[in-house]
Image 1 (cartoon, rainbow, N blue to C red):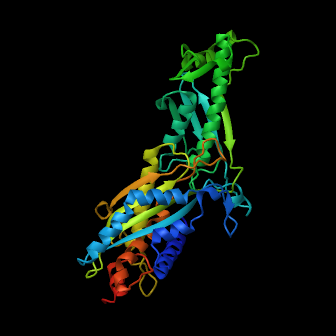
Image 2: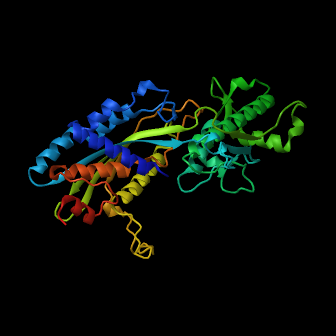
Image 3: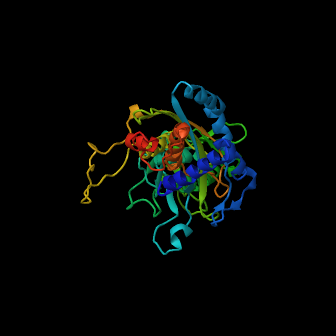
Length: 417
């Protein structure tokens, strides 16, 4: 999430400082000033073009998800007992699906398009060679889902091949949250082409019209009655081994290629709001993260589990930056914590429950409607944590603007040391 967490921490901290200065609740201040969801499309003062965001809906959903009013009441009661809890909010946007203008305008040979080649094999399975790459985020899974859905076959019948640049089409691979938004659209359009070819060939074999047929459960069926007519494997057998039985003008093309590049908005912006709940021990400076919430809008969701786990992983990375991770150097400029023996990273025992909810505002630039989600968790996690810790210190008139928020820095902010 290059740049996002830092920019978000600065801007969202300023919003909370403005709320404190004016005596307005931080959520209320955001409710008043976030761009209304029905004001899109619009442009920012710096020229960014926004197609459709949902900050107002996201904030309302987050407030309900958190039980915000009850948390504030509990916070006030606990302060009377010397327990100092803080609640932090941070809204964010995330750039995804970058268009050719992103790097092309500077002459960089970085591809913003992706390509896919789909083929029905002689056994009736489908092979998808695609230029987006799998890095553990589930790209192969969603590409396989999209292809299987369009062709009416089981996911197990689709073999997805990525990362082999000698055999896959040229494309942009995986970066800047573009796997589902661009790669997914590429697979979708390729699968639709292949579906059309399969139905056309099936219609020739069955001496009917393509519009009277459909593909379901790996079989070509009558569109209206659902009666099974011919299996995909049988179509492949005829195309590959008995094309002599087809009319001379028949097309037996069971391999298709498609390339897709964004043509509308320069970016598809993912957006959302995060909340963080912490408890600060003012005597030791230690912070316990009690819970974290994320409401995110990444357009149409293809695989909810994969999206949620990407967001959770991003939140953990963001909380690591907020409380643990820091490169330290001695007076000679030598890194002193260059191994995981000394460099702190968050572990499972330090991480809270992370609750996630979604708003879906599909981009109209593609038929799929998906935006990226890979950086959303990281983008606002440290900002929400920073605001939460400052909220916990508010009764003492203390403030911290540096991360990671180590116990030593917090005690200095509190004036204890």
